[in-house]
Every structure is written in C-alpha cells, then in structure tokens.
Image (tube, rainbow, N blue to C red; front, top):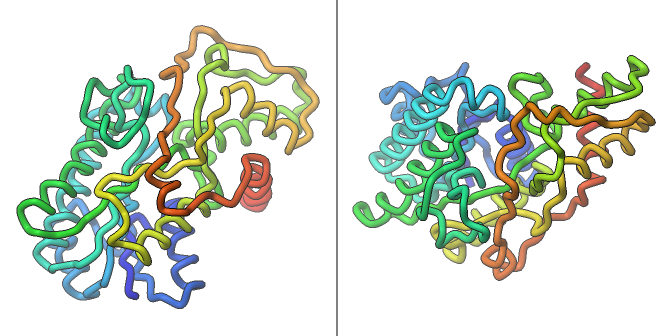
Length: 303
C-alpha cells in the first residue's frame, strides 16, 4: 500500500513514516520543504503525481496552551487551509482511503463524556479555540465529502500525544515534553523547586505516539470497520500533578513542586470515550511510565 503522509516532519508523521516502512508498505512523506499544502495547486500536484492508495493527514500548526492563546487567528486559518486543500485534492484525484487526524480539543468544553456523538454540541474551550474550531471543521469535511462524493473518509480523534520527535521548546511544546524539559533542567541546575502552572488538579489523557501510529495502520488494514469518527486513547487520565511526579521519578529529580496559581490550567478534564476503539479489538501497548522513559531517552539524545 502506498500511503501519503502529510506533516511528515512532525512527531506523528515521522513515527508513521518509519512504521509504514517497517510494515513493508510505501510511504510518501510530505512536509513543508517538499510541498506547501496551503497552496491549492501544490497540494493537488503532489497527490496527482504520487497516486497514493491512502492519505493520512497529520499536518497542522500545533502548540501548547500559551502560544494557542496568543495566536488563535493563525491556528484557525492555517489549519483550515490545510484541511480544505488536502480534502479537495483528494476528492479530485479519487483517493480511496483518507484518514484525517483530529484532536480531543475539538470537543465542547462543557460536556462530561467525550463521545463521538457529542462532537458538535457546544462551545470550544477558549484557550485553544482557534485550533479546536479548525480541527472540528476539518473533521466535518469528512462527513460532507462522503455525503456528496460517495467517498469513505474517516476522522480519528486522538487524545493528547507525546513521544519521539516531539517538540521540547517551551513556547511550542505540549504538556509532557514541556514537563520533561522543565524537570530535567531543574535537576541539572540543582533547583529545590520546580513550577507547575495552576493547581495541578486538572486531568489529562496522554497516549504514546507510537501507539497512535499502530492504530492508524490498524485502521488502514481494517478500513471498512472504522466508523466515520473514532476516538483513540488509553481510557484513563491523570492529574497534571501526577504527570509531573512520574516525570520526576523517571528523571530522578528529588526536588519539590510549587504551583503558580496566576497561570491558566485549561479545562478540568479531557477523557475520551474509547468504546468504539475497544469494539474494534485494538488497545495501546505502552504504559505511561514506558512512554515517558522512551521519550526522555530521545530527549537526552537531542539536547
């Protein structure tokens, strides 16, 4: 199977290209250097030329809570352009399989059960509104395309991710890589205390990126069994404080943690309902500790 992967230089994309090769399939990696997906013509041409059997749309402008709050316009516009162009080019080139990657932040902020049937039921959390709305609208395009053009495109909605090839820049990283860098620096600088934004009681669900990649390939192999929208997660969440504790244990940081209550914490909880995923017979293989250990080993190689 020839699989075109957008966002091939990002964390999910790089892990996916590597795993596709290991499976004996043919990856077509597409990144900013090889194609500007915000340009309609370039986007069309790369698909027309490569003639993929499937596309996995991983490309996106991503970042942590701080940069999302400062640049909601850019996060909305860029991610909408990417989604619209890749869908349009896929339809025109009659690509048979298409997996769009969504995000748990697409879900409305005031619902307690993050089930696929509740996707379009309310207001997006303000701290990532631009990104969340763009990902939600792009997900809706799979449904609209299928109705009008008789395609069979899918959207997988993963929980938060971390892993090899993650971003550890404080301004661009998500929570776990940011915590790994922060705790590691606290250790090497012999700091007695390490800061946590907010009170640390908010709960988050994180999956190791290699596990998501396994689910993507599982979905391509079992394509017709995958529902229109399908959550992908571990089925359990932890507090921000607990994530800091696990990272500290992995890194062997002996200091304490303090809380900056002037900083935003985000929504209280983001736990996906993974009943659809479970019904397919798939589950992730890494524990939180195993994933953080592997990610820390990668971090040590790049610093």
